[in-house]
Length: 264
Image (cartoon, rainbow, N blue to C red; front, side):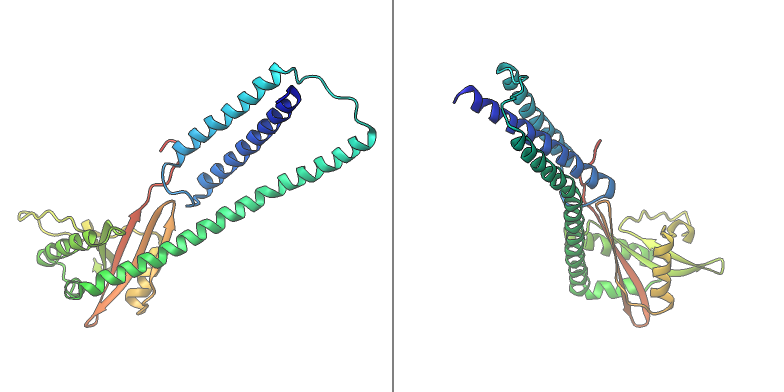
């Protein structure tokens, strides 16, 4: 391979490395800022390693250019060739600019498909857990604010959380009243019984956003059977209504999948 071929090869490697670096930084920023769930874990580590690899290619190409004195400019091309080269450069530049919206659309589409697939899988898992444990689910629906029900609920939820790997966290949400005001109470698998302290509903109030409170109100007070799924920044939440003998509860399943971020 002569020096001219090496020069051409080093130019190709250098330009390709720069393009890869720009694209990868754009993809990483898009995923980080908009929370796209395209790559699952260890994204930060992969990003750093990729940057090192791309920079190594760039510096290698630069060294080759320096070794073969690429600072000289060929002036033996005629005007027609230069004009054709300019037209080609404009086309390539336009394609390069238009590629960024395309990449963003692909990332957005991948995120949507990933969330939709996850929703179907989690709904099926929740339905399976409830149906396979019908007797226990009926016990949960027979809500009563006392230590016996809370103790039994904690035991059942511990079984639910270990039944399916998709749901490490399971809790029960019920509607109740506190000082003549409607409230939503939440119970999980952790219950530390204390015989000297009376139960207090304020300790079990379910923290929820306005959208979640509106949803729970529709379920408990408007007889809605809608299943609510929410995905945000790797956290999946599923609200699954269940009723038996006129009593209704909402099983709240949650899962957090760690997606790589800077500093994670």
